[in-house]
Structures are given as C-alpha cells and as structure tokens.
Image (cartoon, rainbow, N blue to C red; front, side, top):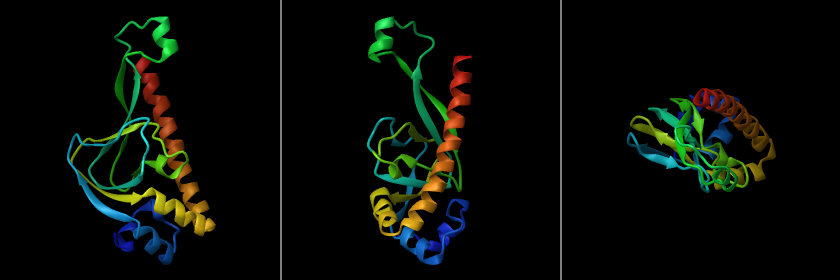
Length: 165
C-alpha cells in the first residue's frame, strides 16, 4: 500500500477527500523500473495505471516506417513495417496507462522508461471496482482520466504529423 499523503502531493489527485485517497492508495504499490524497461506495449491488455514519482516515461506508438516503401496490399492487410515513435513524455507527477481504467483495458500506445523511474502502480481492476461502489468518485476520476486522454491525443497528432513531415 502507498500512503495517501503521497497521492495528496500530486495534482491528478486534487479534489479527493481523505477517505477516497486512503481507498485509492490501498490499490497501489511503489515500483522501480530501469531505463529502457517496458511498462507495456501497444495493443496489449493492461492491468495497471501509473503515477510517475521520479524519472521520465516515453509514450510510444508504432507508426508506418516512412523509410520503407510499402505495397498497397501491405497497407490493406496492416503488415507494414513500423517504427516506434515517442508521441509524449511523462514526468514526475503525471499519470499514464489510462487504458487500464477504460474498457476494454487494451493499450493504445506503449510505455517505456526513458530514465530510471520510480512509479506508483495502481491495480486497475481494484480501482474500477471502487468506482462501481462509489459512482461519485468514479465520475471524478473519469473526468481526470479524460483530461489525460485529451492531452495524449493532442501529443499524438502533433508528433505523428512531425513524423511524416
């Protein structure tokens, strides 16, 4: 378990009362990842939601490799050669792995430790069960997750355009 006081320090958890912080903290553990370690890959089932305490995490999407000529059939079958492109970087106080909180809990991108990282790792299913039990908390957390999703979509658009420019 993580201390609720740890969570209270981060803006993502602003507006939550002490009882909610205690309950959410109960679903979390501190974890360390080394530079280059993968948290998850694009298209995988995901069981966790993360808060970065220290270090940086790259959010990576597989985009068609523009240095390779692709046939029309490869484009239709989805068998094009791809290249991992960092579309966003997440640092201390920021969250990632929002797909763990949104059905069907499949990742839309990958996450890779750019540096040694210390994170708070939340059990996504425990959080979802908690949100079912407490819809007001679920609504508040869904709104917070939606802000993260909006930012990642913006980052993805900017970086993918730059990748093809």
